[in-house]
Length: 516
Image (tube, rainbow, N blue to C red; front, side, top):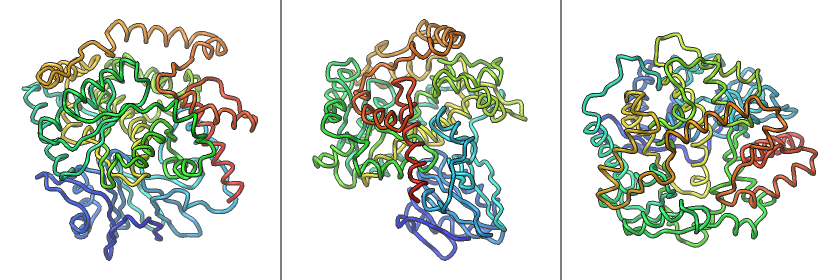
């Protein structure tokens, strides 16, 4: 076994760790304490048990008599990668470090990537390089890698808990944000504040817990409804707020030729992940202007809406939904009309379940493990790229387990989540904007009908109807990327940022392999 690890790891004799976590008693653990926590692990059983007890953003490697055990947190923010080469297994936190000469693109994974913006299974874009997936750990012995799950979002019907849900949710929020306050420890907090519920929940809870060293920023048009809500929320809570216009920034910088951005693409892409352009210029600007302090913590509202039921609601997932239908909706969420039958069949197999778990939880488990952990959470790497810390309160296991056991009917259109926040948290702080920027039942029905119509239309017509509204200046940012692709003979079918950046990153990887 050979390790290729960055300088950020803390190294013991037979144990390597980085990051932070909380144990079951909410004790904050980092650095040498985190190393000590795992140093006594002797067996795979002990390792799995320990992982299930922890909250946080961390990675760990432990050498035992049963083999090397390696894992990351359930959010998948910093995956570990491995490959076997010349009868030796290599383990790294950088997929690019595992490249050898004469590599070729793994076509099957490339198809997944261009359709979904992430790779399925443990695959990367290079055949032979794999990653340890979110919610799993790996045991490596005699150059064989066996992956096992240590967390799942699937549940049985008898696990649904409707007792005292308002009280339990309020307790969960206090516990989650109590842990977050310990992690913040007086440092500056930066919240990407939208007009939605998730980021507003973060600033509201921090305000209630007397955390005041907070600044907020919103990306987009100052005249938009989204910006007006965010500005009003920040003002009423007394937090400084910045509006950052990506369209204006794009006129001053061609990201496709920006050396720092190209390095960032390797850092975030890792031969498997979505490339996010949305936050790059704003976060760099916050750093360059000295607005973001060097030890600041960025706390985005990633995943709250999904846990509360947004994905299953908008896709009309019920206990009677077939795996074929769920696979189709997963593809339509990311791909350009979701018309790849081979990919659909692949997702159907991944949705297969042996246990009699709830169908809705089966769908949510796939979305959380793949779309959220491999796609949405990749966006947080822009913060760590510029040297900042990250916290993801919606990935606290206590909060995830609350939503996991919430009855599916209360997740429809995020019913419980929105009602609780409006009545119990937002209205007392005068920051409730009930009904604004919130999908109604009719909106969900129309979305469902439109998806059916697009599915049966000829591809050319369906593509012409798939224009993505440019609400945050993405067209200006992506224009140079579209031009570069065209010059390379690669044509984009839509203005969808997902399509453009997937094709561009795949092209970059191919160019990199030629030069490697």
